[in-house]
Amino acid sequence: MTPAERIADLATTHGYTVAVAESLTGGTLAADLAATEGSSDWFAGGVVAYQTRTKVAVLRVPAGCPVISAQCVSTMAASLAELMSADAVVTVSGAGGPEGQDGQPPGTTWFATLVRGRARTERRHFPGSPEEVLAASREFALRLLAEEMD
Image 1 (cartoon, rainbow, N blue to C red):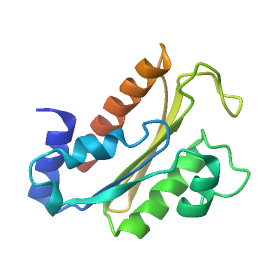
Image 2: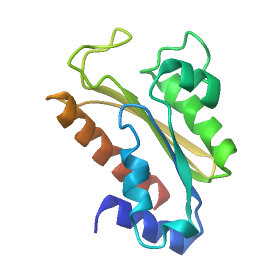
Image 3: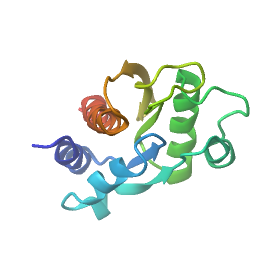
Image 4: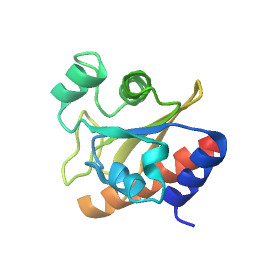
């Protein structure tokens, strides 16, 4: 079972409404979830906030907040949960490379989940090309959300 299929199963079984807010992953989390069977019953949608100004304007990340930080992804998660009326959300923001960002080296990625009021943040560093960092971040985000929903 893929992580997206696991999320679908948990959402159906436990009545979750799921949403995602993405930066680094550029909409791939939403695409994975939307492609699962029955997603229209539990997937509220996603926000791709790739630029900092979008994170600030749409997801209420404070201006000047480093976008690759626990504070950023936590704020994204809380704002997304409210915006989408979702009770299981995952957010991701990171430096895919080849250059770093906000003083963080390439491959540094922050994740947040907010599942029925229970918040979690986690920082990971994924080596490799920008494509490899994106793929690893995508996989980790979905696995993290499934773990927190379980």
